[in-house]
Length: 144
Image (cartoon, rainbow, N blue to C red; front, side, top):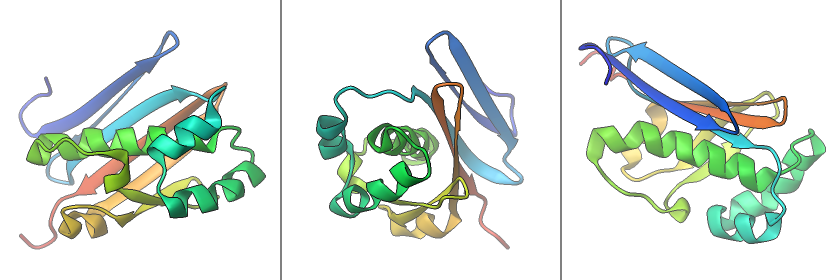
């Protein structure tokens, strides 16, 4: 539980834990996920978590040093789902969301339902010490 006026998210994997919190004056939700950057079943995971466009773009991630693009897609979508779920209680499938990754460590939402959230979501990812970590931030409505 987070104090009144704050939102947050936690994740843990392989003996490590990460947490993030924000003031709801600035953001309405955050989500974070941590995954090991090793996926022996990469093709099967990619088929399960990625849309067709994400599969086509996965080679670009390999070119910038992401060993397991499927795990990064999983990690980023899990962070997004953790941010979205407290807002609407919806369970989402990996195919319900399409992400676009940039080599600068950011990702955007190419498609999300409800679509009105897409322009307010930003994401970031990093690869460190054998882990992938992704953060999704949903900004508050401006002027409301």
